[in-house]
Image (cartoon, rainbow, N blue to C red):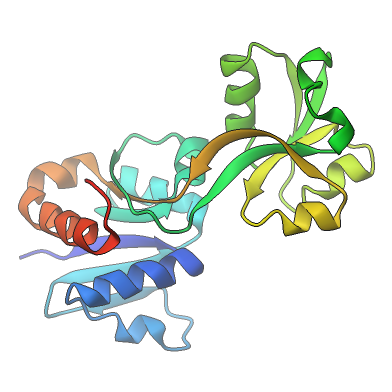
Length: 214
């Protein structure tokens, strides 16, 4: 039996996913130790876990370096990779939203050449240009996007909102909701053919524990 490789997004999602893998009988003890290792093996269950940057999870899965991935919906929308999205795991819940000064609420449609800063340019473009038919000037940022409207770099931002605390502290509000987000269970298309029984068993166990439908 070959190993099934699981790509986990480093950080909170990986920790939550490890808890579920542990509950369904996988050995994730080594991963929970303080270590710089990136590959962990569960010999008994023939499972291999790799820790990667969230934005790289869909790439590892699409190209078959990982059979399974657990990653946020935001990353899947932004990366738009060719894979199967099997389950909404229901944890890591938040939303993608357009945020900016409260004075712009209800007025975004009237602004020509709206300048939008985001770590998620593809999601922002799809929302404004494809869904709303509005032309925007997109500015790709990698750091604290909340700063952009405060210093005049952009009119608004498109970003993940969890509690909204950071927005409020910077004098910004949610102006429009783009979409809800949560962790997703994704599978490589070839792996699904070759290892369907083993993968579907894991999917079913995950759905039982998370209380969501496959």
